[in-house]
Image (cartoon, rainbow over all chains, first blue to last red):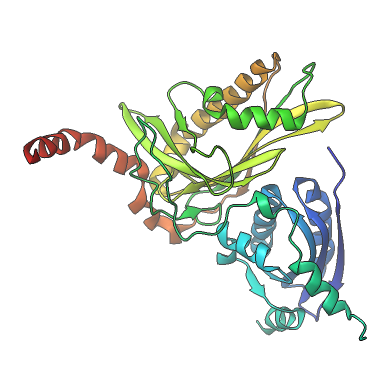
Length: 119
Length: 254
Protein backbone atom coordinates (compact mmCIF):
# COMPACT_ATOMS: atom_id res chain seq x y z
CA UNK A 1 0.00 0.00 0.00
CA UNK A 2 1.23 3.56 -0.62
CA UNK A 3 2.63 5.50 2.32
CA UNK A 4 0.39 7.83 4.31
CA UNK A 5 0.64 11.42 3.09
CA UNK A 6 -0.25 12.82 6.48
CA UNK A 7 1.47 14.08 9.61
CA UNK A 8 -0.15 14.24 13.02
CA UNK A 9 1.18 16.21 15.91
CA UNK A 10 -0.20 15.72 19.42
CA UNK A 11 -0.35 18.52 22.01
CA UNK A 12 -1.91 18.93 25.43
CA UNK A 13 -4.80 21.35 25.81
CA UNK A 14 -5.47 21.67 29.50
CA UNK A 15 -5.77 18.80 31.95
CA UNK A 16 -8.59 16.99 30.25
CA UNK A 17 -7.97 17.43 26.55
CA UNK A 18 -5.43 16.74 23.82
CA UNK A 19 -5.23 18.20 20.34
CA UNK A 20 -4.22 16.22 17.27
CA UNK A 21 -3.08 18.50 14.43
CA UNK A 22 -3.90 16.77 11.14
CA UNK A 23 -1.70 17.90 8.24
CA UNK A 24 -2.03 16.39 4.78
CA UNK A 25 -4.29 13.69 3.36
CA UNK A 26 -6.82 11.69 5.32
CA UNK A 27 -7.26 8.42 3.43
CA UNK A 28 -7.25 4.70 4.30
CA UNK A 29 -3.45 4.86 4.37
CA UNK A 30 -3.59 7.25 7.34
CA UNK A 31 -5.10 4.65 9.68
CA UNK A 32 -1.91 3.69 11.54
CA UNK A 33 -0.81 7.33 11.89
CA UNK A 34 -4.22 8.40 13.23
CA UNK A 35 -4.48 5.53 15.70
CA UNK A 36 -0.90 6.12 16.94
CA UNK A 37 -1.72 9.79 17.43
CA UNK A 38 -4.89 8.85 19.31
CA UNK A 39 -2.98 6.46 21.60
CA UNK A 40 -0.47 9.19 22.32
CA UNK A 41 -3.20 11.79 22.84
CA UNK A 42 -5.30 9.73 25.20
CA UNK A 43 -2.56 9.03 27.73
CA UNK A 44 -3.40 9.95 31.31
CA UNK A 45 -6.62 11.62 32.35
CA UNK A 46 -7.66 12.93 28.94
CA UNK A 47 -11.43 13.07 28.55
CA UNK A 48 -11.61 14.83 25.19
CA UNK A 49 -9.76 14.58 21.90
CA UNK A 50 -9.75 17.59 19.61
CA UNK A 51 -8.92 17.14 15.94
CA UNK A 52 -7.44 20.24 14.34
CA UNK A 53 -8.26 20.15 10.63
CA UNK A 54 -6.65 23.47 9.64
CA UNK A 55 -3.96 21.54 7.77
CA UNK A 56 -6.28 19.01 6.11
CA UNK A 57 -5.55 19.03 2.39
CA UNK A 58 -7.46 16.04 1.07
CA UNK A 59 -9.97 13.54 2.38
CA UNK A 60 -11.75 10.66 0.67
CA UNK A 61 -14.56 8.41 1.89
CA UNK A 62 -12.09 6.00 3.50
CA UNK A 63 -10.81 8.95 5.52
CA UNK A 64 -14.34 9.65 6.73
CA UNK A 65 -14.61 5.94 7.61
CA UNK A 66 -11.49 6.29 9.77
CA UNK A 67 -13.14 9.12 11.67
CA UNK A 68 -16.17 6.87 12.32
CA UNK A 69 -14.01 4.10 13.77
CA UNK A 70 -12.01 6.63 15.81
CA UNK A 71 -15.26 8.09 17.17
CA UNK A 72 -16.48 4.63 18.24
CA UNK A 73 -13.18 3.96 19.99
CA UNK A 74 -13.33 7.34 21.74
CA UNK A 75 -16.93 6.74 22.85
CA UNK A 76 -15.93 3.32 24.20
CA UNK A 77 -13.30 5.04 26.37
CA UNK A 78 -16.01 7.47 27.55
CA UNK A 79 -14.15 10.35 25.94
CA UNK A 80 -15.49 13.02 23.60
CA UNK A 81 -14.41 13.95 20.08
CA UNK A 82 -14.37 17.59 19.01
CA UNK A 83 -13.01 19.33 15.93
CA UNK A 84 -12.06 22.77 14.71
CA UNK A 85 -10.44 24.26 11.63
CA UNK A 86 -12.81 22.63 9.14
CA UNK A 87 -13.20 24.61 5.92
CA UNK A 88 -16.71 25.10 4.48
CA UNK A 89 -16.02 22.22 2.09
CA UNK A 90 -15.15 19.76 4.87
CA UNK A 91 -18.01 21.03 7.04
CA UNK A 92 -20.31 20.17 4.16
CA UNK A 93 -18.82 16.65 4.01
CA UNK A 94 -19.43 16.20 7.74
CA UNK A 95 -23.03 17.24 7.04
CA UNK A 96 -23.54 14.86 4.07
CA UNK A 97 -22.07 11.90 5.94
CA UNK A 98 -23.94 12.98 9.08
CA UNK A 99 -20.81 12.92 11.18
CA UNK A 100 -21.89 16.31 12.49
CA UNK A 101 -24.66 14.46 14.41
CA UNK A 102 -21.98 12.97 16.67
CA UNK A 103 -18.85 15.12 16.44
CA UNK A 104 -18.89 18.65 17.83
CA UNK A 105 -17.58 21.19 15.31
CA UNK A 106 -16.05 24.42 16.63
CA UNK A 107 -14.83 27.54 14.86
CA UNK A 108 -11.55 28.00 16.72
CA UNK A 109 -9.06 26.23 18.94
CA UNK A 110 -10.01 28.43 21.91
CA UNK A 111 -13.67 27.51 21.57
CA UNK A 112 -12.93 23.79 21.18
CA UNK A 113 -10.54 23.74 24.16
CA UNK A 114 -13.05 25.61 26.31
CA UNK A 115 -15.80 23.13 25.37
CA UNK A 116 -13.49 20.15 25.96
CA UNK A 117 -12.43 21.28 29.40
CA UNK A 118 -15.85 22.52 30.54
CA UNK A 119 -17.61 19.18 31.02
CA UNK B 1 2.58 46.33 3.22
CA UNK B 2 1.62 44.25 6.23
CA UNK B 3 3.03 40.80 6.75
CA UNK B 4 0.77 37.77 6.73
CA UNK B 5 0.09 36.16 10.09
CA UNK B 6 -0.14 32.35 10.45
CA UNK B 7 -3.93 32.80 10.85
CA UNK B 8 -4.11 34.65 7.50
CA UNK B 9 -2.19 31.83 5.84
CA UNK B 10 -4.56 29.23 7.31
CA UNK B 11 -7.59 31.18 6.10
CA UNK B 12 -6.12 31.54 2.60
CA UNK B 13 -5.29 27.84 2.46
CA UNK B 14 -8.86 26.94 3.43
CA UNK B 15 -10.36 29.25 0.82
CA UNK B 16 -8.45 27.56 -2.01
CA UNK B 17 -10.37 24.84 -3.82
CA UNK B 18 -9.58 21.54 -2.05
CA UNK B 19 -8.14 18.76 -4.24
CA UNK B 20 -11.09 16.49 -3.41
CA UNK B 21 -13.81 19.08 -4.10
CA UNK B 22 -15.03 17.50 -7.34
CA UNK B 23 -15.22 14.01 -5.86
CA UNK B 24 -17.83 14.54 -3.14
CA UNK B 25 -21.60 14.76 -3.47
CA UNK B 26 -23.06 18.13 -2.53
CA UNK B 27 -25.21 18.31 0.55
CA UNK B 28 -28.92 17.83 0.02
CA UNK B 29 -31.45 17.40 2.81
CA UNK B 30 -33.17 14.52 1.01
CA UNK B 31 -32.47 12.29 -1.99
CA UNK B 32 -33.80 13.04 -5.46
CA UNK B 33 -33.95 10.44 -8.23
CA UNK B 34 -33.17 12.00 -11.62
CA UNK B 35 -34.95 9.35 -13.69
CA UNK B 36 -36.60 6.01 -13.08
CA UNK B 37 -35.42 3.30 -15.48
CA UNK B 38 -37.88 0.77 -16.84
CA UNK B 39 -38.42 -1.99 -14.29
CA UNK B 40 -37.21 0.11 -11.35
CA UNK B 41 -39.46 1.22 -8.50
CA UNK B 42 -38.85 4.47 -6.71
CA UNK B 43 -40.93 3.98 -3.57
CA UNK B 44 -38.22 3.99 -0.90
CA UNK B 45 -35.66 6.49 -2.10
CA UNK B 46 -37.18 9.80 -3.24
CA UNK B 47 -37.42 12.19 -0.31
CA UNK B 48 -35.50 9.93 2.08
CA UNK B 49 -32.37 11.13 3.89
CA UNK B 50 -29.04 9.44 3.32
CA UNK B 51 -27.86 7.66 6.46
CA UNK B 52 -24.37 6.76 7.63
CA UNK B 53 -22.93 4.21 10.05
CA UNK B 54 -23.76 6.46 13.00
CA UNK B 55 -27.51 6.55 12.34
CA UNK B 56 -28.37 2.84 12.21
CA UNK B 57 -29.67 0.51 14.91
CA UNK B 58 -27.54 -2.65 14.92
CA UNK B 59 -23.96 -3.56 15.66
CA UNK B 60 -21.39 -1.66 13.59
CA UNK B 61 -19.46 -3.86 11.19
CA UNK B 62 -16.53 -3.23 8.91
CA UNK B 63 -16.35 -5.89 6.23
CA UNK B 64 -13.51 -5.93 3.75
CA UNK B 65 -13.52 -8.11 0.64
CA UNK B 66 -10.49 -8.06 -1.62
CA UNK B 67 -9.08 -9.87 -4.58
CA UNK B 68 -5.62 -9.70 -6.03
CA UNK B 69 -5.66 -9.29 -9.81
CA UNK B 70 -2.47 -11.33 -10.21
CA UNK B 71 -1.21 -11.52 -13.76
CA UNK B 72 -3.70 -8.98 -15.11
CA UNK B 73 -2.13 -6.09 -16.96
CA UNK B 74 -4.31 -3.42 -15.50
CA UNK B 75 -4.06 -0.38 -13.25
CA UNK B 76 -6.21 0.78 -10.32
CA UNK B 77 -7.65 3.50 -12.58
CA UNK B 78 -8.64 0.91 -15.21
CA UNK B 79 -10.21 -1.32 -12.57
CA UNK B 80 -12.35 1.45 -11.10
CA UNK B 81 -13.35 2.74 -14.54
CA UNK B 82 -14.45 -0.79 -15.49
CA UNK B 83 -16.26 -1.28 -12.18
CA UNK B 84 -18.17 1.99 -12.51
CA UNK B 85 -19.19 1.24 -16.08
CA UNK B 86 -20.23 -2.37 -15.45
CA UNK B 87 -21.46 -2.28 -11.87
CA UNK B 88 -24.67 -4.19 -12.62
CA UNK B 89 -22.87 -6.88 -14.64
CA UNK B 90 -20.63 -7.78 -11.71
CA UNK B 91 -23.50 -8.11 -9.26
CA UNK B 92 -24.77 -11.64 -8.60
CA UNK B 93 -28.06 -12.74 -10.14
CA UNK B 94 -31.26 -11.83 -8.33
CA UNK B 95 -30.26 -8.23 -7.71
CA UNK B 96 -30.53 -5.34 -10.09
CA UNK B 97 -28.68 -2.03 -9.94
CA UNK B 98 -30.22 0.69 -12.09
CA UNK B 99 -27.24 2.96 -12.64
CA UNK B 100 -27.98 6.68 -12.69
CA UNK B 101 -28.28 8.18 -16.18
CA UNK B 102 -25.21 10.30 -15.49
CA UNK B 103 -23.27 7.23 -14.36
CA UNK B 104 -21.53 6.74 -11.04
CA UNK B 105 -20.79 10.37 -10.32
CA UNK B 106 -21.00 12.23 -7.01
CA UNK B 107 -24.53 13.03 -5.85
CA UNK B 108 -26.29 10.74 -8.34
CA UNK B 109 -28.85 8.28 -7.02
CA UNK B 110 -29.20 4.69 -8.25
CA UNK B 111 -32.24 2.49 -7.67
CA UNK B 112 -31.83 -1.11 -6.56
CA UNK B 113 -34.12 -4.06 -6.82
CA UNK B 114 -33.22 -7.01 -4.61
CA UNK B 115 -34.96 -10.19 -3.56
CA UNK B 116 -36.37 -10.99 -0.15
CA UNK B 117 -37.49 -14.41 1.09
CA UNK B 118 -41.02 -15.23 -0.12
CA UNK B 119 -40.48 -13.76 -3.54
CA UNK B 120 -40.96 -10.19 -2.39
CA UNK B 121 -38.96 -7.61 -4.28
CA UNK B 122 -36.96 -5.14 -2.18
CA UNK B 123 -36.94 -1.69 -3.73
CA UNK B 124 -34.28 0.60 -2.43
CA UNK B 125 -31.35 2.65 -3.71
CA UNK B 126 -28.03 4.31 -2.96
CA UNK B 127 -26.46 7.72 -3.40
CA UNK B 128 -23.00 8.13 -4.88
CA UNK B 129 -21.27 9.79 -1.95
CA UNK B 130 -17.78 9.98 -3.40
CA UNK B 131 -16.14 9.07 -6.69
CA UNK B 132 -12.60 9.59 -7.92
CA UNK B 133 -10.40 7.67 -10.37
CA UNK B 134 -9.34 4.99 -7.90
CA UNK B 135 -12.40 4.61 -5.65
CA UNK B 136 -16.09 5.31 -5.24
CA UNK B 137 -18.52 5.10 -2.32
CA UNK B 138 -22.24 4.48 -2.15
CA UNK B 139 -24.32 5.69 0.81
CA UNK B 140 -27.66 4.21 1.77
CA UNK B 141 -31.02 5.92 2.32
CA UNK B 142 -33.36 5.57 5.31
CA UNK B 143 -35.19 2.25 5.09
CA UNK B 144 -32.33 0.40 3.37
CA UNK B 145 -31.34 -2.87 5.09
CA UNK B 146 -28.24 -1.16 6.38
CA UNK B 147 -27.15 2.29 7.31
CA UNK B 148 -23.69 3.20 6.09
CA UNK B 149 -21.56 3.18 3.01
CA UNK B 150 -19.61 0.86 0.76
CA UNK B 151 -16.29 1.93 -0.67
CA UNK B 152 -14.97 0.26 -3.80
CA UNK B 153 -11.31 0.88 -4.41
CA UNK B 154 -8.29 -0.38 -6.24
CA UNK B 155 -4.61 0.06 -5.45
CA UNK B 156 -1.19 -1.41 -6.06
CA UNK B 157 0.23 -3.81 -3.49
CA UNK B 158 3.64 -5.38 -3.99
CA UNK B 159 3.43 -4.82 -7.71
CA UNK B 160 -0.05 -6.29 -8.10
CA UNK B 161 -3.34 -4.47 -8.58
CA UNK B 162 -5.86 -5.23 -5.86
CA UNK B 163 -9.63 -4.63 -5.99
CA UNK B 164 -11.47 -4.09 -2.74
CA UNK B 165 -14.99 -3.52 -1.44
CA UNK B 166 -15.30 -2.28 2.12
CA UNK B 167 -18.64 -1.99 3.89
CA UNK B 168 -19.06 0.11 7.03
CA UNK B 169 -22.57 -0.54 8.23
CA UNK B 170 -25.18 -1.10 10.91
CA UNK B 171 -28.53 -2.79 10.35
CA UNK B 172 -30.95 0.09 9.97
CA UNK B 173 -33.60 -1.18 12.38
CA UNK B 174 -34.37 -4.10 14.76
CA UNK B 175 -36.05 -6.18 12.04
CA UNK B 176 -33.05 -5.92 9.73
CA UNK B 177 -30.70 -6.64 12.67
CA UNK B 178 -32.58 -9.87 13.31
CA UNK B 179 -32.45 -10.68 9.59
CA UNK B 180 -28.69 -10.11 9.47
CA UNK B 181 -28.20 -12.47 12.40
CA UNK B 182 -30.41 -15.10 10.78
CA UNK B 183 -28.42 -15.49 7.60
CA UNK B 184 -28.36 -11.94 6.29
CA UNK B 185 -24.64 -11.48 6.97
CA UNK B 186 -23.88 -14.65 5.03
CA UNK B 187 -26.04 -13.46 2.12
CA UNK B 188 -24.29 -10.10 2.12
CA UNK B 189 -20.84 -11.70 2.20
CA UNK B 190 -21.81 -13.85 -0.77
CA UNK B 191 -22.95 -10.79 -2.75
CA UNK B 192 -19.62 -8.99 -2.41
CA UNK B 193 -17.50 -12.12 -2.78
CA UNK B 194 -19.34 -12.99 -5.99
CA UNK B 195 -19.04 -9.38 -7.20
CA UNK B 196 -15.27 -9.44 -6.75
CA UNK B 197 -15.02 -12.86 -8.37
CA UNK B 198 -16.93 -11.52 -11.38
CA UNK B 199 -14.75 -8.41 -11.53
CA UNK B 200 -11.58 -10.53 -11.37
CA UNK B 201 -12.97 -12.86 -14.06
CA UNK B 202 -13.51 -9.81 -16.30
CA UNK B 203 -9.74 -9.27 -16.12
CA UNK B 204 -9.09 -12.97 -16.71
CA UNK B 205 -8.14 -13.66 -13.09
CA UNK B 206 -9.28 -16.58 -10.94
CA UNK B 207 -8.05 -15.76 -7.45
CA UNK B 208 -9.78 -16.33 -4.10
CA UNK B 209 -11.57 -13.41 -2.47
CA UNK B 210 -10.24 -12.60 1.01
CA UNK B 211 -12.87 -11.60 3.56
CA UNK B 212 -12.14 -9.77 6.79
CA UNK B 213 -14.99 -8.97 9.17
CA UNK B 214 -14.54 -6.73 12.23
CA UNK B 215 -17.25 -5.77 14.70
CA UNK B 216 -16.33 -2.14 15.31
CA UNK B 217 -19.11 -1.52 17.83
CA UNK B 218 -21.09 -4.36 19.42
CA UNK B 219 -23.64 -1.96 20.93
CA UNK B 220 -27.17 -1.68 19.62
CA UNK B 221 -28.38 1.90 19.24
CA UNK B 222 -31.83 1.60 20.78
CA UNK B 223 -32.46 5.31 20.22
CA UNK B 224 -32.75 4.43 16.50
CA UNK B 225 -35.45 1.74 16.80
CA UNK B 226 -37.97 4.05 15.13
CA UNK B 227 -36.06 3.62 11.85
CA UNK B 228 -38.38 0.65 11.34
CA UNK B 229 -40.98 3.15 10.09
CA UNK B 230 -39.00 3.53 6.85
CA UNK B 231 -38.21 -0.20 6.49
CA UNK B 232 -37.96 -0.67 2.72
CA UNK B 233 -38.60 -4.42 3.01
CA UNK B 234 -41.97 -3.91 4.69
CA UNK B 235 -42.89 -1.06 2.36
CA UNK B 236 -41.86 -3.05 -0.71
CA UNK B 237 -43.97 -6.01 0.48
CA UNK B 238 -47.01 -3.77 1.01
CA UNK B 239 -46.45 -2.23 -2.42
CA UNK B 240 -46.24 -5.69 -4.03
CA UNK B 241 -49.35 -7.04 -2.27
CA UNK B 242 -51.46 -3.96 -3.02
CA UNK B 243 -50.42 -4.05 -6.70
CA UNK B 244 -53.71 -5.60 -7.94
CA UNK B 245 -55.66 -2.96 -6.02
CA UNK B 246 -53.71 -0.13 -7.69
CA UNK B 247 -54.15 -1.81 -11.07
CA UNK B 248 -57.95 -2.05 -10.51
CA UNK B 249 -58.15 1.58 -9.40
CA UNK B 250 -56.27 2.71 -12.49
CA UNK B 251 -58.64 0.64 -14.65
CA UNK B 252 -61.79 2.13 -13.15
CA UNK B 253 -60.42 5.66 -13.43
CA UNK B 254 -60.08 5.30 -17.20
